[in-house]
Image (cartoon, rainbow, N blue to C red; front, top):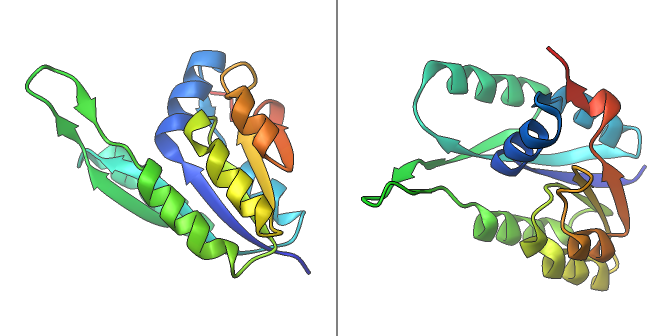
Length: 158
């Protein structure tokens, strides 16, 4: 059975799904969809820690599904902008996992990951990208072995 490492860019998923559909992403449906392709042996969800109870509850749901939740503190800059970027952390973890699995699944539409998926594929590992249609970088879609649009059952309609 094919082994899979799953990586979820929580901030990207939250904002792109909300912008496109006005609802939330269904992580349980993602897990089920990815599991149909093989056995998930590693799974990480990258999020920003604001310390509020609702977020902590959501993070526990992710853990219950099987994700290892990685948190960075929310940083509010003096100019009012915010920082909470996991791109380097995701990249390091994907490169590490690529030597241990048959497929990398990245749930993010962030075009910054195009070179990462190209590198993974150059190592002979499949690279699947899940992203919101119209909000996923074309470079990321081209770099992936397979692109799965986030729509339908991957959405939590309230």
